Image (cartoon, rainbow, N blue to C red; front, side, top):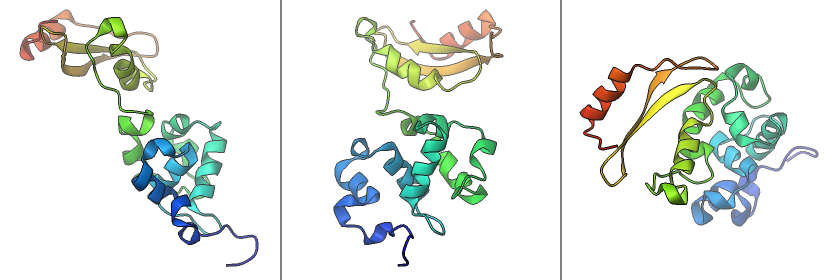
Length: 174
């Protein structure tokens, strides 16, 4: 390997490689850069996957979520991220699990704030107003969550008949 070139990750000790650490210890043990490096898979000429991940995160202010939810034009053309890699990275990252530290689940206990993490994970990255329905059973367990109406940046038109129709369709008690 030539002087000044990044060291190939495959030559690193096994316990230091992001992919192996992910498998052995879980995603919570990885930094955002390491997690992104695993999603990228490989590096490019002159940079390993971790170097590319660090550069991408730095460009987006250190925020993995900001990078993963950025417009395609903001990502394409960055070093190590062309159309092919973008096309494989974005479907992986658009799952809610990739943009939250831990998967959000509905607990049904409003007093304990059980609904907040779930709703935050579902709604936080939307750049427009939405009207969503939480269809609950008689014990306030989630039956179904759905975006019913999409609006503009400051409002959404809601038709009550659609809300009632959906509640009946899912046999929701609340």
